[in-house]
Image (cartoon, rainbow, N blue to C red; front, side):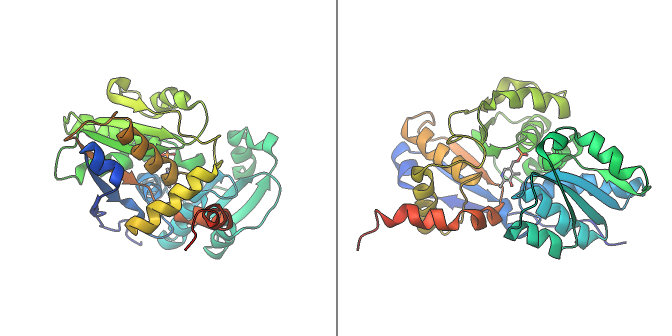
Length: 308
Ligand SMILES: *Cc1c(COP(=O)(O)O)cnc(C)c1O
């Protein structure tokens, strides 16, 4: 059997932006984007124990769910290929092609497009698909599960100093729940902050309770005003920020998750939510193939203000 581990601790970089210097805060970035190009960032953290559990149960066919640009689908496809498991994805919406789905196919994933109405009942779709098969294993959209929380909590095991605040972008809230769990485990005083990339992000606290029932929300903060119109939505201001950030730091970000995260951080530094002398860790959750869906808009958004 192929071993399940990469045995890799992601490095920590220092991040200097004028907003941070002005606010007198020290900001580090945990580069989970460097874990793997396709089993990227938090997706590896989330899949690790899911893969292990599937194996223990003798299942070698992962069945999962996602939208057409899902980083989770690509990560699952690549992890399946690497660790010797078959993968099937139920993809939300009408059949389309794009670079992320092509990569999924190249990694051997079987794609089934399902209507938005059908997609709402994932368990029914899974039951239908798995009745004739004995080796299937259900993996929820985005890897949402207690096992995934467990994997994300390991991020905190890798830290060698105590931070005042730790920040991450949130889709399902699994990564945030994991960070909070790791903080409790190590008895740190670090405040845990999530930037929901969807509208009305407060619902995440309830969702997090489902996969991490022992978690108290006292030291978890959700900053719900940085969704830029909702999931996968953006403004020109956000796109310009992505370019400014990437071109001045050499760290690539994208508009769907990490763009909103780092934008929020500069805003919170500017309005003094973050206090002088505080130490901050930001988790770069990777997902950079998201760039492929928006590269033309990103470049177009900056054309107007770059005049040499
Ligand atoms: C999937 C993803 C997230 C969301 O993580 P959750 O655990 O679902 O909240 C954040 N950032 C990137 C880059 C992602 O691909």
